[in-house]
Length: 351
Image (cartoon, rainbow, N blue to C red; front, side, top):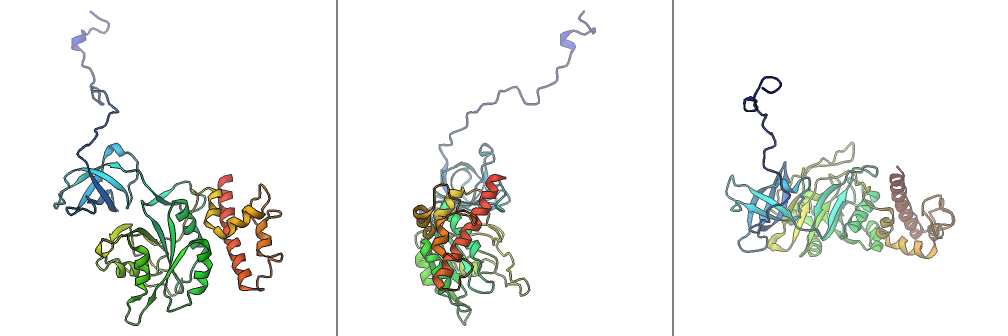
């Protein structure tokens, strides 16, 4: 008799809750998976276009396969899906692979936030929509978007709206030296958007991401470009001068005639650059980059208190007096904007 008075066959073994079959790291190859483009994300479900660009393309709802783990899927992603890809009501496919991305637009909540927010994948250009008035343009916000676009490997386009309220020339002159293309729209008396031909020409054949504050006319622009988009629009608050968020999630919309894609994003009030290295910031300021390389001493930080910084001589010896000429004011504004970004990013690196 064993100790305790029980035979082995009389003792009930506690079952293994994890199962007796050992886990394997081998995942199925999913050779039958079909290509698809992610056009929208909504609470764990993904709107995808199966066989995009082909005659038999189909809109399908899909979920993310468990083996993808925490990998985030965003509009613009090219993926592989399995399961029911008929698009029938109630059907659900499964995303099993994400194709390597050509570009990836990211932002953080602020310059000290270590968490990146992936916005869009595989876009060609970032279209920064800014109103010339009502609300007033925020140049530092535009600068941040330009930096994020260049860091992502995208080109930058500045779309100035509401040109019927203010002259677009000063803003255009401020950004064209940076290599930023500028297009202009205005509101016609019949409430239609004027200047769309220039915008369409810039979007033709490309995948473009539209970003901007609430109230700048981004959703109005999208509705004019894609008539069946039906993006909600809102007015600017007369007290705060800010718009109300009308777009709640990013969505990819095909331009008429299959001439490209526009990805409309929710209105943003901040565009953090914690993910961008300090050395990358100067590349977004092409007019300053050449000055720094030619005139700054080795190890120059290019900040306000940096000794013998070549940017000070480029602006002028007396930086307090910026009324001498429009060109001097323009240079001072560019240096100030770049230095604010450098100071914020340097503080992030030291924290």
